Length: 248
Image 1 (cartoon, one colour):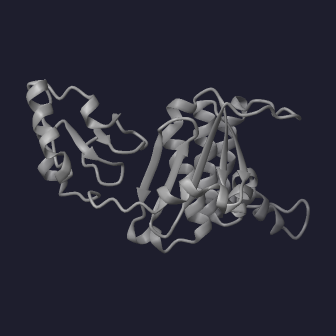
Image 2: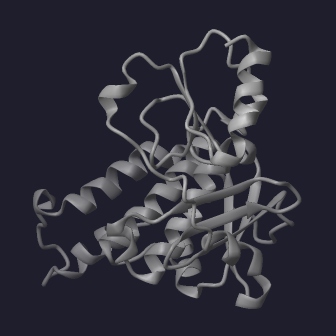
């Protein structure tokens, strides 16, 4: 995770040449990152034991998907118009970041292996990247691991062993839309949303998302809240029944 700093060092013509880092903001961020986190790092064992958790991730032209093996925990999001134009490597690393952020509370204080069918993504997780937009993702992942005390390992697998994550990445969520923020001033919780389209700090999502308050809105008590409800048509009757049963 010192790619940017190493690139700056390589620019020197003499070994003792002075380098003004004020012109290299990425290197400054790396140095500050290590200053703040190096005391938190755990020693790496020479012989690695089996991870406590396994996460499988994948990315497609449509979106990113991931799941925590042995559970029904699923992370998913569709790409924005801008993200759709990103490289396949960026999307694969972003899928890892999404799944890590989504499952972070579950993975706290543990070791986890992320399986991906993209070898470039594995290399970036292990060593970082000389490309700033990829290095930024690598640092984001590393930051999450430090803050949650997660030992993360990345491992490549053939595409045919990653079919479930591939299918998740191709889901098209027709309910992924939103309206203006002003409308939400008097509301307290959005029951059918995701991290990408929510307008409130508290929301319930269909899949695991970073900052979601709950998976499956029907597991929550809606009483005493100003609920924003825009369910899929197939769940309208369930919503009415749940409103009545909660006295909301």
